[in-house]
Length: 307
Image (cartoon, rainbow, N blue to C red; front, side, top):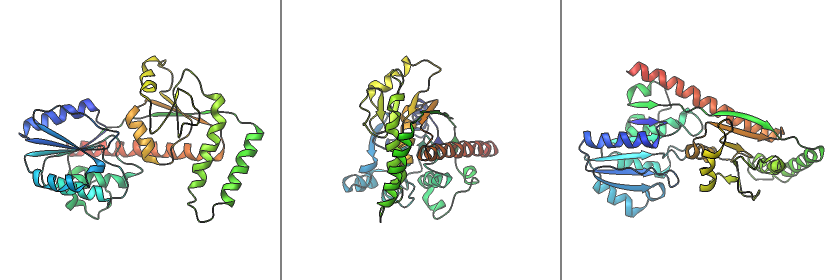
């Protein structure tokens, strides 16, 4: 079973039902450290974190213990686009020990539809080994995909001519000093650089998120360390306000995906200077949102065909 876009409550209900219907002896939950869902079931349950899956002390014991009386829940474990990742391969050994498996993921992929093959590999690695993605595969497995659209808009933070020239100078310096370094460091550094131009536009009554802690403001969180106090302010925000204002995007797509999984905002606003680097990150995110929406729409049609 592959379930995309299921809430913690829906996961809990489904796992409980599965355990009862299949007389499961023990549940193993493979999870990512920042996205752990707690399950309450009428049998023994063990949680194995991503980093522990490859550890000898877990790997061989679990291989001996997991059998066809066990259920494995793969919970938000789409962590890299590399299908050959060692942790994925170790998890496949566990999954081969039992027919009882539920794969949960909030989004159908990290970057694009090819990543969905990692979820299918969790379900049946032998069947899909070496194959590229096809929507027809969704008819072959018990797959349900739900879409949770995020409203996205851009607000502009006007910059001065001096700031524009500072941006151009920084850009030219980064290109001139690139040498053998990764070219991706240029937009990465420029995006943080122009983010500092936005400090005067940070609103004290709204929540913001940035790549690092350089703003030193209580209502600006980072992607890695969303403050509990910041998240608890959601109920205090007017209904017509965005859940978060993005000051700058993280460089890695997975970090922003985790942010969306954790906060589940209905609306995200990006504060943009209108400079090319901000336009680039804005365009990349808009393209990603469209890919997710298109995938979920097509998956929904395949689900109807299967039913």
